[in-house]
Image (cartoon, rainbow, N blue to C red):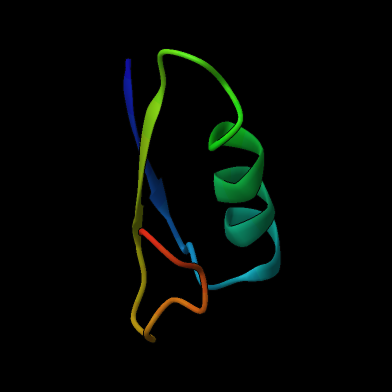
Length: 41
């Protein structure tokens, strides 16, 4: 399953991306206005 998270550089979006990274079978993509501090997004 592919999931797009908007606001990925914010508090909630960043936490959601980190959580989704551990879920098998899920590809999570982040979109933000600022560069993301997370690797591989």
